Length: 185
Image 1 (cartoon, rainbow, N blue to C red):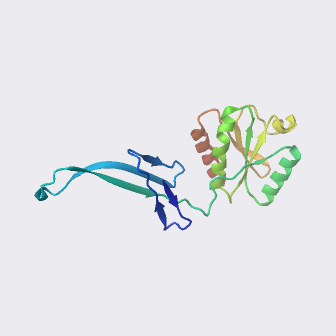
Image 2: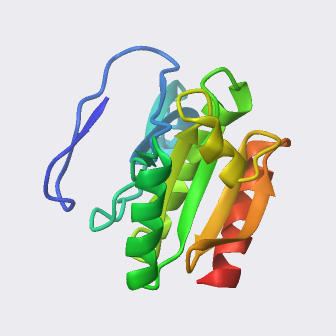
Image 3: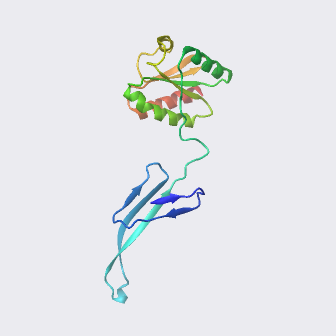
């Protein structure tokens, strides 16, 4: 197992003596692969025994610590709160992304953390919010003209400009949302 020090130039290794050990950190910081190769001792020395040579290849990728990995989306719980958010966004001339979702909707729940990662990419350019349609008055849901979930809408200047209805795979929805954002930002 490896430990990364606070200073990105320093890395400590602690190696366990287990055979065929592989260690992968899916978080993206460190991958250690232990492979076994064979080498022969010099022929002139007369020693023909095989030796196991262990190789460690360390690939470290340092994340950009100046930007957050994900930004938590803020909930919208009433029509008045939506009005306040849209008014402040209009003053800043900043678009707003609203994810209309439900707590029982599996695709909505799966999509939310991916949208929070996308929010980190556009952290300074726009704000991300979500509305749980079961916890808000139906007048708010009607105002958003929501018929299917999850629905991701881009609001600019107090009105809805574009929307993506996320009934398909999450990575496709995220790409469509990214395109929608690039068209209006």
